[in-house]
Length: 296
Image (cartoon, rainbow, N blue to C red; front, side, top):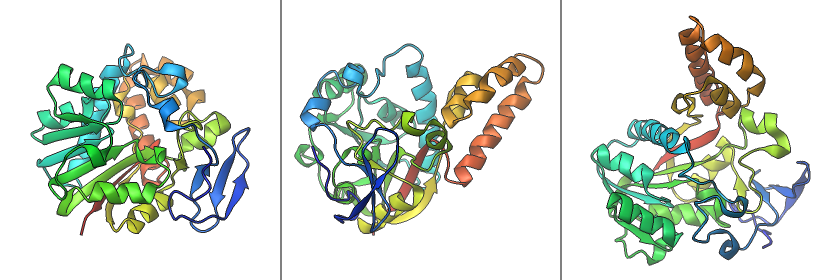
């Protein structure tokens, strides 16, 4: 499927962006980076999407990944609650198998989910007893302006009209409530170091690649006011020092610091990694961008 309009501002004029073999474009009007072509969604979001089928997504039940996600989701919720006080009513759009919803529910939130992949929605209901609706948000039968916090984690980069989708998310938020969006960070150190092999490029399904500026601008175009923009890397959720360093784009330090971590200097190594993550976050160079915006 061709992507001829900028997903953020709708402009038609763009410049080619040299990025290995990938056909990317940079919007002349707003600077957003997009793929010029993606697969038809019907080819991507099948029932085996969350099982890592055909190179799409990852298997969220893979050994070791589930524990990491639980720790990362707890960190994410803490960041959100620092900007959007709760608990209250929370809607997670694109909630996969509902693991973040479980984290939020355990923290006292009244949670609901929407998931496009029917098998994942069914798993969320069967495994966790969650209220997760299968299909599109517009068809989920939810009352507009009825939630305190509506979340879209790693969803906005998939849609051809990012601004319209954020506006749709906001329509389910009560006045004064918040929308939270998390996307891979085009401005990350990881992307700069990995180049065309960037793990979050996913050119067959990711339409838009956001920086701090273009994400903030998209939220503004959707009528929202960004109250907090963060750039976490979730290194604290990774139990292995080497993996934490690789995750932020410092793979060359993984081997020596892993060895050092096994000595008495281990606590200092861990503190150093946390310092690196804080520095990257302050420079909006972390692995992802996490924005919280208020609905008027």
